[in-house]
Amino acid sequence: RAKSNGRNGVQRFTPELGKRADERLALSRRMRTALANGEFRLDYQPQIDLETNRVTGVEALLRWRDAELGPVSPATFIPIAEENGLIVPIGEWVMQQACFQAQVWQATLPGLRMSVNLSPRQFARGDIVRVIQHALALAQLPAHLLELEITEGALLHLGSLDVLRALRATGIDIAIDDFGTGYSSLSYIRNFHAERLKLDMSFVRGIGVHREDEVITRAILSLGRALGFKVVAEGVETDTQLAFLRRHGCNVVQGYRFARPMQAAEAHNFILQFNEGSLAYS
Ligand code: C2E
Ligand code: MG
Ligand code: MG
Ligand code: MG
Image (tube, rainbow, N blue to C red; front, top):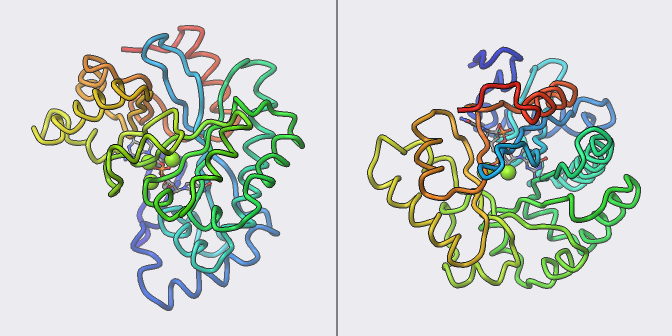
């Protein structure tokens, strides 16, 4: 069950952990004290603008290392945190931490944007706008440097789009995460007030392999362009994928081809070097 994955040992446990009820219960119990014990951390994955060949933003990705279990994948613990409600305090911590980090980085990486993932449950609370504004104010981060990543599914659960409207009004950007895997109609997408669509990595993975994935990728890229969205491709791992995305007008890429999610100091060094042009690009 324990699977070593990557040099920093992130995600030693696969999402398989937590499939069984007793495992979920155990994880849920351990999660209750994890925040207070400082077991959470954020990693940051660079996003590269293909027009300028520069890192223009990072996505904050939550990491949990339990004392006994070791690293637990967010794919495993986020759904459990959604269920037991802990996603609310954890999400607030993530927001605050990400805003502080983004603000610190402005000194050496001016204009660098921070993307933060939000789950449906965090929206269900009436005070999400206030929580985010509080985090921005505390960190003294300008709202336009923050982007919220929300999946289509989460958006459909919203009921009302007032929250999105309120967030947009403060200058915060919205990105639709895992785009293409949900059920929203294309015309409805326009109502989400989003700036960016994040093309799901399942399509990216099929580039050069399955014609259907290439067709869908091209369709999403041209749809995005036609409707005025920027498209971010997730999970870009190979030169083939990169060349295809570039050729079809993808705006931004994110993936192991460039960089894995990294701890803050490592991410900072990477971005400085990359933007200086001293890291091989393509
Ligand atoms: P996501 O937001 O779609 O994040 C992208 C996932 O793809 C991340 O997995 C990232 O590490 C991984 N990834 C990036 N590049 C590549 C690549 O080239 N190849 C492959 N195979 N994978 C790549 P991660 O960090 O395990 O996160 C999984 C999911 O957990 C995220 O999907 C997001 O939905 C959720 N999540 C992570 N952090 C947070 C958070 O702070 N709050 C909330 N609510 N959800 C989070
Ligand atoms: Mg995301
Ligand atoms: Mg995604
Ligand atoms: Mg996802």
